[in-house]
Length: 373
Image (tube, rainbow, N blue to C red):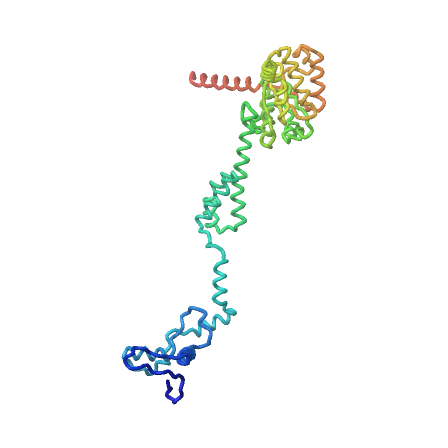
């Protein structure tokens, strides 16, 4: 085999005519391999699959296939990448394909949608049992968006709603436990109509400083002068301040203790009456106490002595307590514990009930006189 330049690159013997054979030697095969390998480039293959503009030769061949002249083909630009290359140079070194692929694999997950994030936030609030905050969340978010609140302001407003709702629930629970007969407060008491009450002393008691010293309050006076109303008002102030309060009458306390003793629950009933920060015992002396009733009242006062405060209302003077309890020793021991740290409020004035009855009667009398005239 001879090239165009008359160089012999391979020799082989010729088979007889009609033999149907092609005879080749090793030199022929080696020459073919060298010729094939020489046609390949030793340059590195293309590393990226990017859109590249066709070369001038490729464009010329394309124009020939379309039957068009190949003039000025090399000057046409299909895609101009110079602008993108300049931007990439300004931004920094462009990462390779391998680097970009790796960054995609380790990148953060797709951003959470706003609706899903909202549902998760409500779920977190419900899990933490912040139900009022969860219920108010849409309203607070709308308000924050409308008023352009900061994140801190919106969060504070949301938690404020939960705090206020929690305070209201706790107040309602304390009021249920207190068993106050009326929703009286100190503002409902008419000091001008009851001059026998030391208003300055009552206002000082309303500060609840006596609870810090485990002091007692004794309201002494005839029926109808406002003893129970003042006791309830002070108890309500303690409830509003977050203290545990319980209201009962002396007869009811004696009956509960008597029943507990019969049922074998004496220690539990004593713990119950020892628990409240403030215990109000109303109407001492209105009804006679049984023998074990006086003993039960003494034990309640004794276990609360110097530990918790007690408000006691009575229509019996302190000197006559021996007759109420039927035992001078028990009465003296109880008074000793009650008066050790106590504020005694003596009320001597007109009865609220009689005054209301008198006013009603006067109105009826004026109405009858007016019609008769």
